[in-house]
Length: 215
Image (tube, rainbow, N blue to C red; front, side):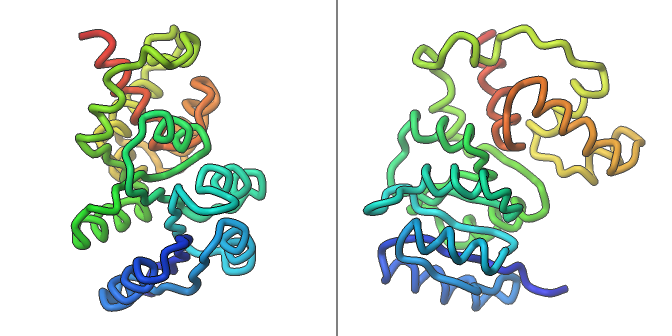
């Protein structure tokens, strides 16, 4: 199997070089581009169309949230994972709303980050405990966006949503429910539309917020 292509967007050259050397050494990934700014990263994303893009949040000029927004407008289909040094709840929620497929701290152990990114590439979404803790208090989230809002879901959509929150990929969900991958994709699209969300990670976060709000 060919390695997954990666694009790194981070303004710290030593950290970026360390990531590149680590991921290239695994054999699972190939770093095809490095960007020192958000604007350069967007240009490389358009040119290279990598399998996954790692994005730093805090960069001079165009920050990570603006990068996510522009990549979404350009309909870049690469998986997008935020890699940041700080854990800020508002930034987490903004990244989710802008279509981030993952959100990790820079202090994460390299092998844990590699596993997380591998899962993201395969469509398996897992919320780290620290992210769940951040989502526990939704007082500053507009009432219309909280997990407890009333949404009409079919039984299959609800089953699909529950399994997404457990970190299952489309193939795993299809196998467990006895349906095709294509049918699962339809359910996921319906869930994103009904809940006004943009990514699987945000779907998982929605379920966790709803569960925490009901405790």
